[in-house]
Length: 103
Image (cartoon, rainbow, N blue to C red; front, side, top):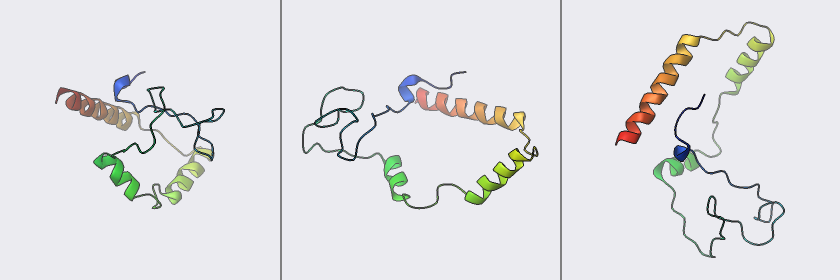
């Protein structure tokens, strides 16, 4: 099942070595999705959403205790999936994507 438009998904960049170049490649890393190298001194501006995510860097992004509880419930066979909740969230996600594409 495919949700969303491929154009809405972020581009995936190649694996980068500690020298800053893609694995198996010499020289500057290619610009994602373009295939060309970025000139030295290229300016990049983060979107407000990306800047907010970067500001949260280093803070807990998940609840480790909740993960442990769910993991334990799965291993003990106590974890139950509520398909109604999943369906409701999928529909809400689809509505949100449609609303964004119509603006």
